[in-house]
Length: 95
Length: 330
Ligand SMILES: [Fe+2]
Ligand SMILES: [Fe+2]
Image 1: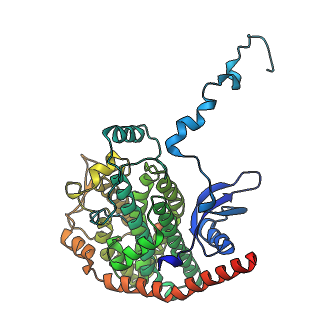
Image 2: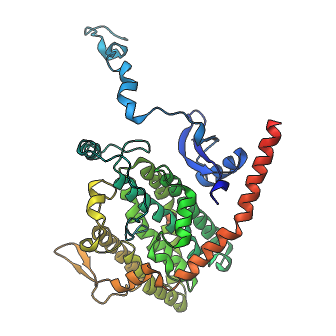
Image 3: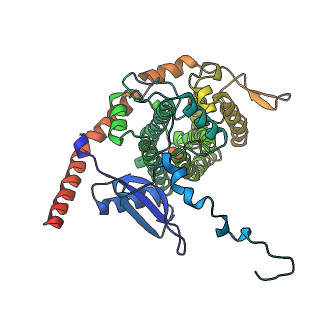
């Protein structure tokens, strides 16, 4: 049975216009069109979406959780990227 | 509950290749204690992974098998409205099974493996779905009591430490309250109908009351997995706590319907603020789990034949996809 397994797809839904797509879950399907149909039937039975993306799970490239600290470290010490780094005297407005 | 937590980990489950160090385990528990969510690719103790695979897959199997008792009445619903509602509810249960299978898959178990374990009888599903639906009122009782008990258990699971499971439960919980309400409404309609209709509702409550209380699993003193699941924040409340909450809420609803809960010892305790109720017939519970309930063999036979009868569809879809891919490549 196993060699006939349908591949896994990740499902992303745009809940309404103006919002970005968000991960909802996954479905198995034989091909792309079936993945869209299954995603619609599984994740949008109550009009939860106006747009669907499906993408083969094995095509996603992800950062390694074990390397999270090192991977994101370059941003850690750059506090001057945040507006709160700057002292603005009282009385200066609209800044 | 849907995952009554009774089957022990199988012998042939993968042993962890790398031994787990005390530091790893401590760091993991610290994340749990800080209410951080654990995600699929994060490091986790093998026992945590196995517990979740067992619980989530049992939960998924229960949703899938749970379609059968209600499906039994789809063609005999008393009106087109009731039929459409029941169809939508049963379809939701299929969806719940699918959300949960995909949550379990993030832990490294394949869909095929889970299905094979269900079909071989290795994996369990909730005892409640091994009771027959003898009349239309049973559909009311199931929505009201069975989905009601499920909600009681599933709401805390929305805060489960494992992210993919928690997120699947949020989705499930949004859909469950329609299930419970439609069931209560069926009961209410029957109770406001003729004497014969009210008697049907009473009979359904009589048969489904105790099996519904059994859904919460064994008493805390006999619950093997509870303490560890609580420490890992997979579980937030004990079986007995949830069962008590369910009784307290549901008895009042039965009063509203004018129905009698089938328990002579049921009494409100002013001091504790809770209802006291009789001991559950645990022998019946264990018998049903062991496969000897009224409908166990029927449910499994139906699930197996549905799987086998659908094999050609899965194969044909696969062959079509392969052909299209070959054409596109050419
Ligand atoms: Fe459900
Ligand atoms: Fe439900």
